[in-house]
Image 1 (tube, rainbow, N blue to C red):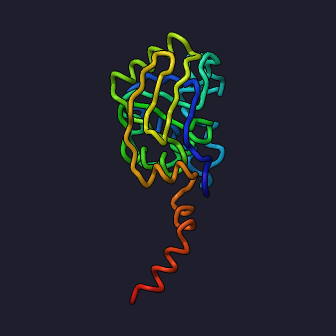
Image 2: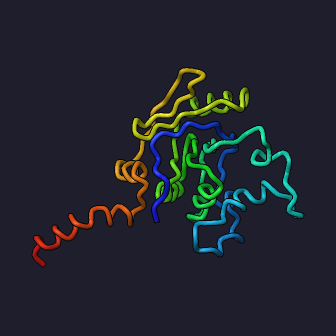
Image 3: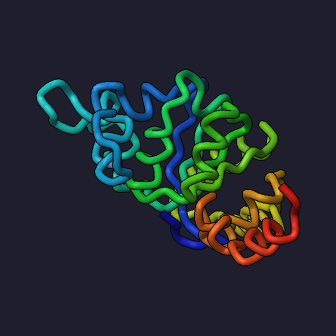
Length: 198
């Protein structure tokens, strides 16, 4: 199952300056029964977004109309905890296409890359500049350029590069998951198999 191609994303962002956000906070365990990737966005940060009576918590950023966009900006050590891939599903299903932080848990990073969410790791100093810019002006736009591997704050005329696995980068540029990638090189695989002795 492929996903939307990612090349360059220009968007406002949602700031969540909390460190050590783990996967159970991103999507609580009680919502992991489904096996398809749809519907998880409704319960993204469920316990932070809603009171026990299901009324929205006005102070939580996802319930604040001031902030919106396809980029989620989180604090250091985003996605720690259990390896549940549903956390990445929830972020994608909610509508985010990129998460920016100064550090990601490795498994969470891999889960995001597998389903079309780009995890962009920047320096703590650059992350602070993003937060400050967005809090000062919620309409601040960020540009995430996957091909050039950089993220910029045009209003400040500053940018920073980020690293990404070459294979995952090519998959995201083409909107491929691992199966799509294999199907795309199917002829090469068949040819290799024909010419390789058992």
